[in-house]
Amino acid sequence: MSDSVRVATYNVHRWQGINGRTKPDVARAGYVISELDADIVALQEVLRPFDADGFGDPSQDPLSLLCDELDLHLAFAVTRRHRRGQLGNAILSRFPITSISVLDISHSRIERRGALAAQVGHAGAGLGVVATHLSLVDRTRHRQIQQLMDHPSLNAGPAVLMGDMNAWRNCKGSKVLDEELGLHHNLDWPASFPAGRPMFSLDRIYTRHAAVVEVGHHDTPAARKASDHLPVVAEVEVKRVDVEMDH
Image (cartoon, rainbow, N blue to C red):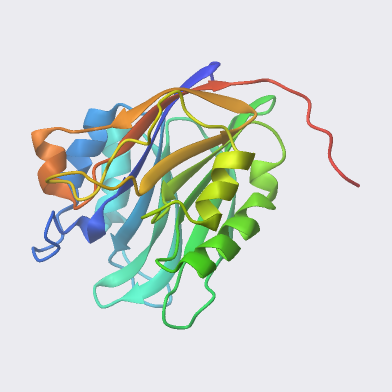
């Protein structure tokens, strides 16, 4: 892994296009993922055609096939069961994924939320990656962010936190992220929702022991049709630092 990494976060809307009413089509959003040319991609609302026990034929899993085609490593974590399979978060990486952990950040039986944490790269040159999709409720979102901030993946070296933060406004949770994690060079976050006419900056990329050199949304004709969110892409400069761990 070099000192500069291109990362992206993308809510793929269950692969059902901008209006969510069409049949899931992984290839449609997969083309957008290929356009990103990113080293690491965090995906939200990923639908996989497995049953509740996780059984399915991997050779028929469109996400696995997409990763094989793009030569990407894959980690996936289920958040909840969907009528078409399993719904959750995923991390796609050009670098080996050496470890993963799954966080249940649900604070309600009605709204199931989760996060997927992974270590990517090689020993001495790794990056912690946390992919998440936060709550629509301000108070719950603040609690979820507090959970994430304590996770080892964000506290054991260079790390990125990416996902659909549902940051409709500057709430307590957003303030915590802005104050405690690395910000970007822009004055404002790039708008990513709705894809057809972006107005809200829901999808964000934060860093710790790393710096966001450049960030923006990926706005192409394909991206405007593949999901109700546009991807957000950032160039991240990884700082090689020794981090003191509590014992």
